[in-house]
Structure formats: C-alpha cells, structure tokens
Image (cartoon, rainbow, N blue to C red; front, side):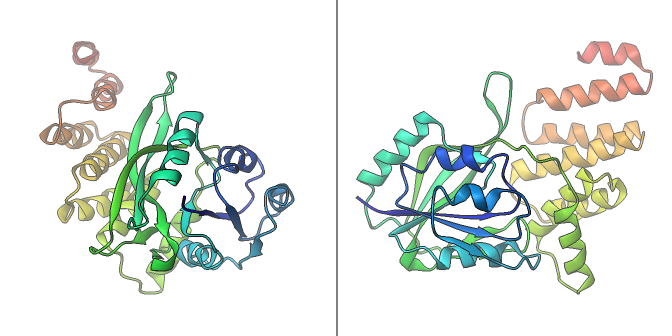
Length: 286
C-alpha cells in the first residue's frame, strides 16, 4: 500500500476547513498545512489534525505557496485539496481502494472535480485535474493564479473515477483580478490559459468591456471546446449586462456550433428577449 501526504495552502478558512479535513483525515498518512496569513481561527483548528503547520509569506503567487507545501511532504505520493473541497463517503472508499491497489509505476492520478452542485446534488460543471502525484518525481506547480501541476509527456498517468466535491462558501472577490493586473503592469505576458481565467475574473468583477476583449483574444487560439463555449457564454452575458441584446445573443448562439443547445444558454437567450421587451419571442423559447 502506498502512503499519501495531503498538502494544502490556507488563509482564513475557519468556516470550511473542518469539513474538508474530516473527509480525508483517516485516508492520508500525513497532513501538511501551509498558512499564508490567516487572521481567523484556521491555524488553531488545523492543530487538532496535524503538527506540520508552516508559515509562508504571501507574495501573490499561488504556485510558489503550493510548491512550498509539496516540499514539506515526506510520503510516497502527494494529494492536494482546497479548503472548500471534500470527499464524500462513496469516493472515500474509492480512494482507499486506490491507495491499496495502485501500481507504484503510476506517477499521476487524475480525479474529477464536481462544481456548482444543483438541488439534486448533481454537478453542473465537471473538471478533471491532476490530484495525486508521486513525491520523488518532484512535479512543480505553474502559474501565479489558477495554477496547475506541470506533467511531462513521459509521466505514467492513471485517470481514476474518484470525484472531489468543490462546495464554495466564500463570495467572489477581486483578489485574483488584482494579481493578474499586478503581473500585467510588471510586463508579464499572459499565456492563452491565463487569458481565459483573466477574462473570467474580469467578468466576475463586472468589468465587461475588458472581459469581452480578453475572452475574444483567448478564443482566437483556443482548442478546448468546453472552454470556448464557456468563454462565448461569458461574452454573451457581458453584452446582455450592457443591454446590447443582439450582440449578446450572437455569442450565445455560437455555442450551438459546438454542442446541442444547453438549458442555461436557452434561458439567457429567452431572458434577453424578455428584457428587450420582445415577450412573444421569449415565450417561444421557454
């Protein structure tokens, strides 16, 4: 059986950290906590789970904090979680089985992340992420915001059916947007991946004109269809917020080029006709 270190970076997570650690504490062999400046009871709470608590001065770079947390792991493999994530009973059992059965030739284990759970506890968004990595491979995190683990092509990857539930509690703020703008002001050139997330941060903070420009630039070089559709929806909704109904619908309709019409897209199209006082057209859609 392999051993697993859980590595987390935290700041002011007193509302959710118990829920997260309770869901995984009896599976992992070590818990490494890196605190980036909590002023609430986060550090006090995690002391009941682990003695491995480290301070890391926040420098507007998530990858540096995560790489620091990985450097403190001592077990065979490293699992990472965010504080607002958890593992339910079904997936705990899957993870325990994986821990017992996995071949030590595996370098990386991917898992699904379930986001935006509906009233029936079904995810509206599913993202596959590298969740467990072999410690001695020295994998590194990349990106100052919306970071990812850099996996080379020679790595032996196992795509598991385990799911992590992302149950966000904190409200959207402008923290990530400020980090992007700081790096841009310092001359940092954004990758296409950065453009996608930067455009979404602009959208979430009601900077619609700039969001439209950034996401259109992203789409020009994008390949992932889900991300393209998401960007098209954000652009469309940005135009609707600006009361530019035709422009908004144009981008929403473009999602039909990639998949059959989705409920949320049809809803926004119908809503745009209603807001434009074209009620009869709206009725036909709903």
